[in-house]
Image (cartoon, rainbow, N blue to C red; front, top):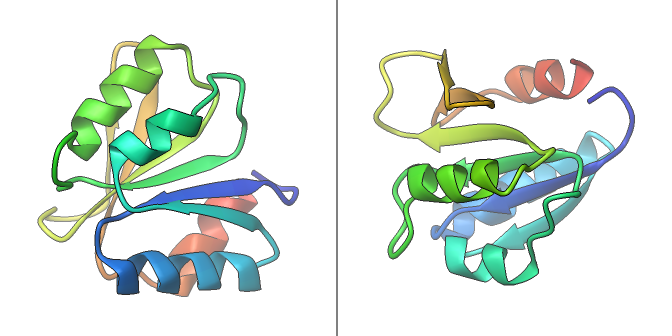
Length: 117
């Protein structure tokens, strides 16, 4: 994601959601924020491009379940699964989509690196 694109942020913690959206905006990218996977799915279009930041543990539909739903729909979004419970940054694979896992809290340098890919 080398040019300015939209980043979609889904986290039920308002402080995390706001902080991440602010950091992404400072890096020059637009943001759309959602407090739940259900709220995001109301707007979601498989043709959207950009990057999706989604918390692993959400009330209702979890981050993992959301990823399964949107990859089945053929999403073009790059996906970052955020968790406070990962051992380290790693790459996981779904059937046809790679998902970057970032452990919270993560550094601004990690965001810059992600957006420069």
